[in-house]
Amino acid sequence: MSSASRRKVLLMGKSGSGKTSMRSVIFSNYTAKDTRRLGATIDVEQSAVRLLGSLVLNLWDCGGQDAFLDNYLSSQRDTVFSNVAVLIYVFDITSAEWEKDLHYFEDNVTALRENSPEAGVWVLINKMDLVDKDDPKRIKYTEYCEQVRALNARISADEPSAGALRCFPTSIWDESLYKAWSSVIHTLIPNIELITAHLDFLRDLLGAAECVLFEAETFLAMGKSGSPIDCEPSELEEIEVDRGVPGLDRQRFEKISEIVKSFRKTCQRTGEVFTGFETAFDGLSVVLEPMSKNTYILVVSVDPRVHAGLIKYNIAEAHLHFA
Ligand code: GTP
Image (cartoon, rainbow, N blue to C red; front, side, top):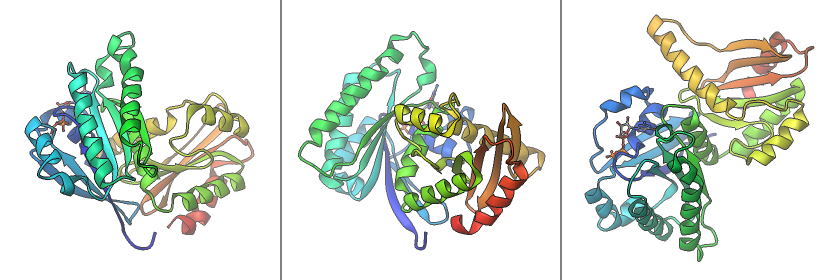
């Protein structure tokens, strides 16, 4: 990427749904426990986050108390909703006021489509850790997503260029948060197709099953060889069978993001520097290495003839393509 690319990301949803917590866990190295200390956001808190060197996210964390929400929809409407690349709308699955929450969502998406018709909408249904498997609220997740999709489709009906809507279940207490945010960031990287082509080339050169690129600070998965980061499960199945590694954990990328981030924190506490890892199990060789100043690469090889040393040599040789 040559010049900086700035993208405005709106973070909205009712007060207490978990917007600032997510932002703090992903971008400020908070643990889930640390977020209990956060106070309510007053009005809009803006921050700029630089990723991959030259992608700048302008994050607008919009405090969710009723008075602020009303302001965004009236006096601040044009300022808040113009030039938006992505709206991340956070719902609290435990909310007792789903109808009211949905009504606010509708108002916000209407304002978004008026001012930024092409913006993508990511709906994160948060605090999933608070509802267990048999809880009717968890069962309702699918129903909630359908309602949100139907509303968006109705509001966007006259706007052929309207951006996509995606729904993710999230919790700041597990890796689901990384999956959702990786999916958002993946779509904002200007040259993601070129990066994916390089990853495909490297994977094929190594006869590897997978090459995945992580952003060095957040450890969000930015791109991977083969299927895009946020592809449908059915598509994933096809690719895994094709590469000869069926049965890999579906949540493996976001789990790696979460594990590496917390391990790195431990390293910081003990004065160690995390530089990567390599491991082998069940016939797989796995290497995680720095790829550039701003990225790490994960290579999963299924060929027993390809040793970790060869993978590392090729990663070193490929540096220039990812710089
Ligand atoms: P406003 O700033 O008022 O708009 O609220 P907010 O949406 O930014 O909520 P905030 O991030 O301040 O979170 C409110 C509380 O919810 C905090 O105590 C968090 O620890 C908690 N919380 C956030 N996400 C989760 C989650 O996924 N699970 C659980 N159990 N608690 C969460």
